[in-house]
Length: 160
Image 1 (cartoon, rainbow, N blue to C red):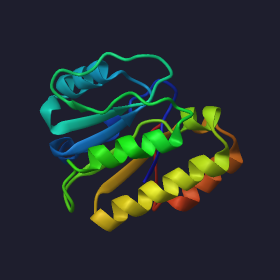
Image 2 (image 1 turned 180 degrees about the horizontal axis):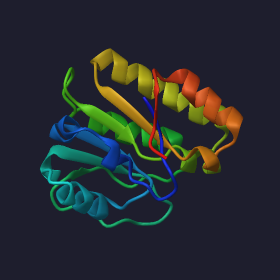
Image 3 (image 1 turned 30 degrees about the vertical axis):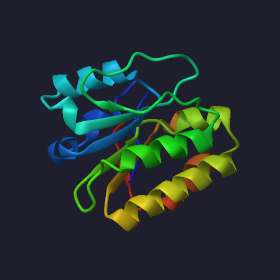
């Protein structure tokens, strides 16, 4: 599912309650500690989430949430490895996977490589029957990239 959001919107605020029972988040928007606080503020247990932080600078780790090592937004292979590590904790037929803002990747890598990553992630989620949500701010990427990502996923939810 492609989740279209506005600038500075949190993809987490668009998720249903059941997503927070078993959730892996790739976060380019928030540090793990901040994401953990958002989950707590939304009334959920941060011990049930995992975070793959994507940042060019060091990040503060979470206290309760499982946290992968920080990965640079230009390192798509490293991001994929972090996700693979975190997916071990996502239960098939029950878990959720959220990439909070794909737009950041388009600033650091070629569109074809980003689309290949999204295609691979969507296939892995589908194979495990895990709900995948891929956030993007449509105005932050070009229309062609948006259309290509949209074509890879099974629906669009517009929360702008």
